[in-house]
Length: 53
Image (cartoon, rainbow, N blue to C red; front, side):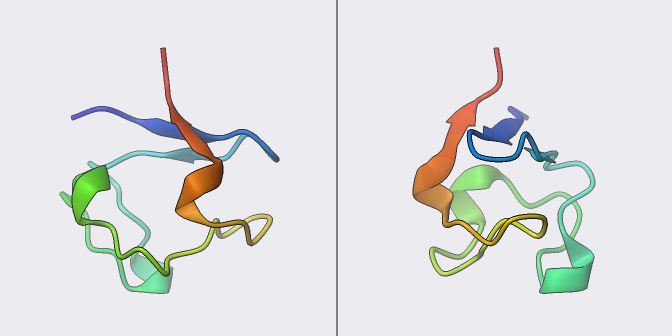
């Protein structure tokens, strides 16, 4: 699964890890992360993430 990086702070969302502290279970693909989820480090929305290359 693809990882996505926050363009503001550099946090990397890894689907294998998820973000369990914020309600996103491990194994959750980026497409299935809720639209209202926020970056756990800086608080921006999903629209501020880009696919990691």
